[in-house]
Length: 616
Image 1 (cartoon, rainbow, N blue to C red):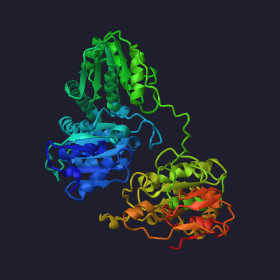
Image 2: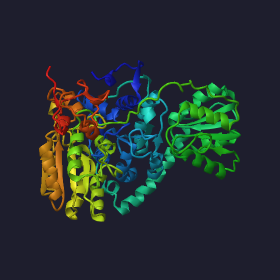
Image 3: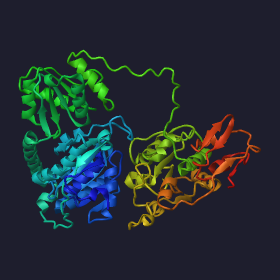
Image 4: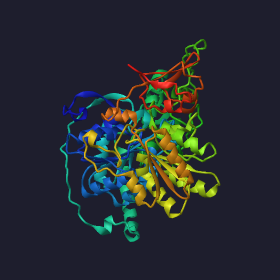
């Protein structure tokens, strides 16, 4: 039995933040769950995927976030409790249906999990999605620890049904991946089917209907505002004259800092857990009771700006500072030391940080940049393309493991902005320049948002090569399934969609299927693509070795070694491929047999045929 299905109310268990959210949804009686996987939210759907195989819970890895929200909307409008999960940039994709779903509303509770990524640990931007709550008019809750992540999830479902609105729960990477004690509650029975009550003049958002629905949304916003005033997640802690406002992970840093500095009796903390709509009366009462205010919030000065506006509207002359105070910036995530220092500086506390351990005599650690895994088929594909197209070609890339092709010596990534952009931007580069263009996109990303760009390329007669890197899984976020995955080895029944059939169905006439570990034939296919006058697609098919091992599909092969008698130390193997299984020992290239998966690409690249299978 899955650990999140343990029905022992009152027991305390250690859970990851994302696991606590999943457990909260189960205790709330969630019956319908969708997502597109994206770090730092991926563990939530990963647990739902496993649980769905043991229970009546419905779960799907949807094609993209927009689809996930639309599928979830159908279930929630019909009356099922629904959860949709995504990372922060995924909400950009989902925002189209979300903005109008806010008008239409839901019948069954719908909770949208949005995971922001301060410091860009695994993302292409650092956007602050608290703005989406304001843009859509939807309530937003922000937990501060694992217990609240469970409890707030449950409350969000109740709030959603009471208001008839989706409710957004915003976490961050730090919260999603902390572990903490969580007291379990009862698991509610799951409602697995519903009946949709037709009402087209409410659910069909044509202009005449939407005008009325916008008025209803504003009325629901007022109801949500009343809830935020009385909710237990917004509170004033302490009675001191020094005011501090905090939300999310920052609240924990503030609590620790106040304790470490010994100023509990001098401080009042305004905790904002039900952060939108902001509790105007509570905030105003707080501002009137303190002499000065420090706002501690990662990323944008959203709470700071709101509080300044409230102070002005209510004639409250209290200094309010946030960004720019101490080390507080709109950049990156905060840490306890930074918060402690800023509080001490702002309130004039004599504080001396702990001296750092002197490590000046310790040699600097070698850099460890992210790298394509040993035996990754993307490395072979990049090598083949580079041999044919050279370095003057423009190489738009996309979001996934293969983005690591950016790094030298591979150096096969020139432009990326979002999922699917490699195909569409390839259209632009091919028209705007005289350079050759080769775009790279992964299999999961192709289904997510690459198909529409390819439709555009075919229809508008663009001329470039698209390489679809099909490694049989959504590798970057943890080997989730997508429409092109053969799910049979995983014990899951899903219809597999052929990428080749999709590409040909879109009108692409020059299509090449290659096995990248067969380097000579792959290079021949790449040459043919360069000679084609139009859109050419290369589908490079080879399993991610980690996924293949995990699903029992890995074909065991012998690792390779370097024959010193043949090796002339050209080092093409390292300088062109940079496989992490290879290293330099003294002046000699070596291969770590424990890392080598036997893909043989280095052997095919070696000009002396000095790399051979190890005989054991």
